[in-house]
Image (cartoon, rainbow, N blue to C red):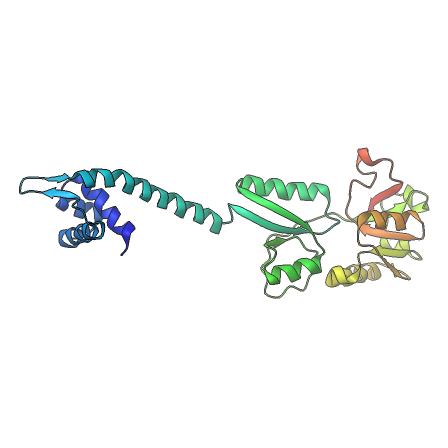
Length: 266
């Protein structure tokens, strides 16, 4: 028995106290409506209406049921609305992945955008490499991710790209640190510090290809999984890195103590 459907019929009849008008409001014929009410009465083993030739009145049982039925139907409406918000991604927990080197300003903009669009959403952030995110997205243990492009991710759907400016990280002691802009060809003879290839294979290969096409062929590539280690290798001298601006570079006034220079690639 579809109890909610029969209760909807009952509530309309209870308010109209006229089967004909109620049937018209419900968009159905009167005989099926009468049968629906009779079935509800049999199910509840009570009479809900006192039917006479002159008028239809609610019985005591009908009066008691009306309030309960309206509350139950309102609860159903709230439940459907709530589940609709969950389906639309406006409620619940969103498991999101971001690379370790994501700039703070980018992360803040993404979180602010999510909060504005879906204030009821609880964002659960995970610091993950691009490869880890692709695997977890495929396994459905992650809902969304921010990955380096290009990336091998067959079967996944991509949203709008996030553009992050890149620049050259050099120690202040480097002669190139005096220049406003540094061409990649000027880095000849320096090693490249970059994230391990396993963390984002296609991005890693793309980066090396860009460096070579612009005249910089690093003798070797030193892997660094996190920004702090990357900065440390650059400070040691003999290496340079291609990285986004972070609070660990002098482009941020509060980070002046870091003896690393951030310049655009030109």
